[in-house]
Amino acid sequence: MPPPAGSTPEPQCELCERLVGQVSRHHLVPREEGGRHGPTVALCQPCHSTVHLLLTNRELARRYPTLPALQQAEDLQKYLHWVRRSRVERISNRRKKP
Image (cartoon, rainbow, N blue to C red; front, side):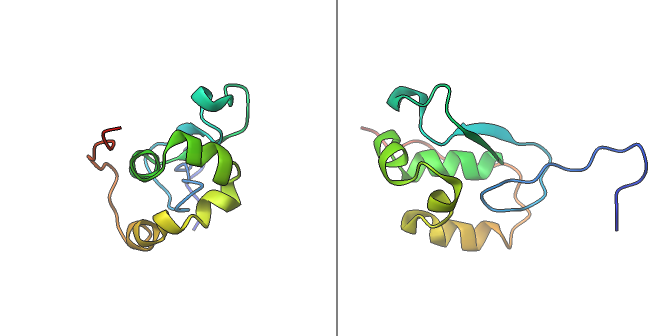
């Protein structure tokens, strides 16, 4: 069913493909790895946090510089299977210690 006239449709996370309350921009190649002016994708907060929890900036830049590559990342498959069935809007996790 289409949204009512005059309403703003919910944004969609480009990684998990869920409709969510809000998204943030994720640099496919992290800024620290030279991606400051490169392509970005819209990710929900749980996906954005989990990407940075499970993958290093170097891995993101070298192995997952495109959305299709990121969607196929082996380290994210279990998470994506879970989140696609979930209604979670926020997740609290911490980055790994270097």
